[in-house]
Amino acid sequence: MTSELVTISPVDGSKLLRRPYLDAAAMQLALDAARAAQAAWRALPVAERGHILERGVDAFVAMKDRVAKEITLQMGRPLRYTPGEVDGFAARARHMIMIAEDALADVTPAPIVGFTRFIRREPLGVVLVVAPWNYPLLTAVNAIVPALMAGNAVILKPSAQTPMAGERIVEALVAGGLPEGLLQCVHTDHEGTQALVASPLVDGVCFTGSVAGGAAVERAAAGRFIHVGLELGGNDPAYVRADAQLDAAVETLVDGAFFNSGQSCCGIQRIYVERSLYSEFVDKAVALTRQYVLGNPLDAATTLGPVVRVAAADAVRATIADAVAKGARTLIDTRRFELDQAGSTYVAPQILIEVDHGMALMNDECFGPVVGIMPVDSDDEAVALMNDSPYGLTACIFTQDEAAALAIGERLQTGTVFMNRCDYLDPALAWTGVKNTGRGATLSSVGYEQLTRPKSFHLKSL
Image (tube, rainbow, N blue to C red; front, side):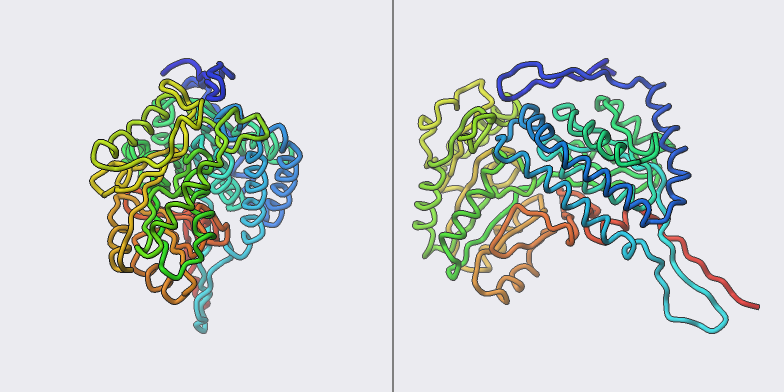
C-alpha cells in the first residue's frame, strides 16, 4: 500500500493537495467506530434521522461556493457549472429524506385471524460507499443519504482525484448533528479499498466506477454474501425519429454528449437519426458544437474544461484515431480550439460520421467530448443498433409520439428510457443499469431495498 494520495489538477498540472492513506490499524479503528455509532443510530426514529440530515444538507448548501471551486480545481468542470452539482446533491438528499418513512415502513400482507404478520426493513449495518471523480457529490449522495436514513453507518471512500468532495460532505453532515463515527471519509488506494470490501465489519458496498473496478470489488467480496451494488460504464444511445422536434433534439443531444467534457456514465456517445433528418441534424449539431469555448474552467466564458488527466485525454484521442483509421470522418476542425494539443488535458469536442459498430467509439465507453452519428431507416434498425452494446444505463428517444416512445422503450436493453431528454437523474425513479453497466439500484423507494434486509415477523395468538 502506498502512503499517500497526490491530486494533480487537470487545470494546470499543479499538485493540488496531498492526503495520507489510512494504514490497516487506522482503518480498523474507523470500522470499529462506525459499528459502535450505528448501534445507537438505528434505534432513532426515521423522522429524527431525517431532521438531523436536513440540517446537514443545509450546512452543505451554505458551503456551495467553496465546494464548487474545489470541484473545478480537482476535476476540471467549468466553474459556471459546478455550483449546480451542490444543488443537485441537496435535491436528491431531500427527496430521499422525504420518502424514507414510507419506503422503510413495515410491509403488511392481508390479515389472517389469529396472526400478526409483517415484513420489517432492517439496516445492513456498515455500508462502504466508493465514489468516483466525475460527479463526486451526485454519485455519493445517491447512496450516503438513503444508507443513513435506513439506519446504517457509512464509510465513504472518495476518488483520489476529488478527495475534498468527500471531506466536505462529512464536514457538513456532521455539523448537522450526526453522531461521531457514523459517517467517515477515508483515503486509501486500490489495495486498501479491496481490504475494506473484504472486511467482516462491512455489510454492504455501493460502488460507482469502471467495469474493471467493479470486477475487482466483486472479487474482494466473493464468498461474503453481502450486497454489492455496482454502477459501472456506459455508451448511451439516442434515437431521433422523423417526427422529432429537430432543434430541441440537436440542442439536447449536443449538450448530452459534451457536458462535463463528456465525462458522464450516462452521457450521449451514439446518435441514430432517421435518414430524412440526418443531414440537417448533423449540420445543426456541428454549428452548435463550434460555439463551445475550450479553456481554463475558472474563466467565466469557458463552457468546456479539461478532461481529468493527460492519460484520459490520450485515450479519447486514440478512440478518435481508431474511428478515423476505420473510415470515420471528423467534422470539427480542432485547430479552432487552441488548447487541444498532444500531451494536454484539454480536448476539443468532436463529431464523427460514417461510423459503424466495428469502431471502439460505437462499442466501448469513451469518457470524453466525442459523439458518433449514424443514419437509420426504421425504428427496428434503431432498436437493433441501440441494443448492440455491452452496456445499458440510459437510452433516449426524440419523438412527438409518446406511444411510439413507450413501444420502443419496451424493446430497449437499458436501465432508463428517456423521451425528449437525456443525461438526467430523477430521484423519484430508480437509477440502475443492465449488462456491463452493473447491478442494483439507487434513488427512489427502490433504492432503499439494497440498503436494508427484510425480516419477516409471523406471530400466532393462542
